[in-house]
Image (cartoon, one colour):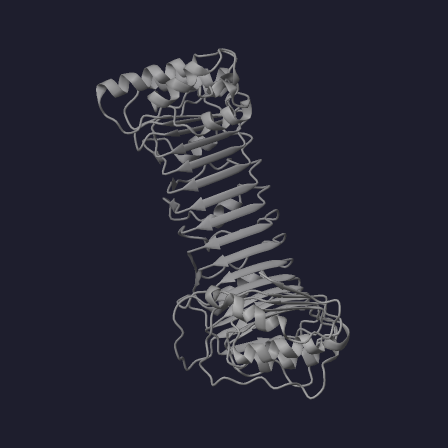
Length: 540
């Protein structure tokens, strides 16, 4: 049987194959090229990568040079969406300039160059390229930025481990990008910018492992020269603030800070338009700097906090009247017994959605949050009842309480709760289920799951049937899901009660991790009485 030719494959599949190939693999690439028609899909390849594969032999060097020239000269009508040059060996500036020039003639939109620390002479042909929108420079050294060098249409610039030497600095390169909108800087030293310099069109800035060479340099000082900046992401970068200069960015909407240290917040610092802020493993000088930072964001709506044990904040004070969404993760590290209070004080009267995972706090204080409609809560804290009990308007609740105590005050009701996800990892989960069923008259969807495995530190609290059938079972519950069902006596009793009393139940789904017991458990479930004649019993 004759093997099919690659030319017989659909054009889009050939394009995909060529886009994924590092074209220096001569035996494969040449074989493919010889089988393609001269006017075939090769001229439409969107992405081309040349990698010399770290082979230092002279023969390999010559072969690679010939291959790159031959490929780029193959068809004058070739359209390049992206050109990626991975250059381990030393190539002359003229060769690199010619390769880029050939790509420019083919309307290249994205260019990536990696030289592994060797000097790169910026190709002058880029100054006339109106199609280039994205440039990535990786591990290159730049000694000269010609005065007339421009990147007239560049929108996105990524600088990864780029070194500047002599009189050349980051500002020298950025001055050649008049329409830049997106900038990523990783492992780069930032020098002082000229007094009149502005990022007039920059909307998104990422500073990753960035260092400031001047004493007065800081992240906040950059905000002064970014008049339309909307998004700022800072990770492992020194000096967030400079206390000697006032900083206000009126256009910033999103701020993400990760793995860094924040000292005192300057008195005149303000972010009047900030809507979203993420504080991920951030170390503060103390609780006061946290409170001050949040106060300087008067219209904040979305706050994400990933807390660490050594962040110097004992009580995290969140006073944000405009906040609508809050996510807190305080579960990293090992739980230890502490004498002093650690935890959160939250005043967010406009809050609508909260994700709260806390295995360390021993102090929680919350104002009544009547607007919260969706909550995902995982807590170990004797004061958690003050927390969950404030969600009187909740509609969707996902709860994991490792304490055997009911995590809300007696007499609390959830009149709007329709969807409940309850984790069965605590010893008192069955008792807690009864409490919530009694206090949630409109519950429609119940999901039980062992999300974290069993944590039975307390004695098992056995299931006791309610004295009267909860209102939600007799009138509203329509769907019940039970994930990681193990068929224990406790679980069978709960399942039997639910199926025997949920008169409106339409679907009950069970799944198990115990494959060897799967058939036996499901056989027992099928024998249970179902009061709802329309209930479907399903097994995943």
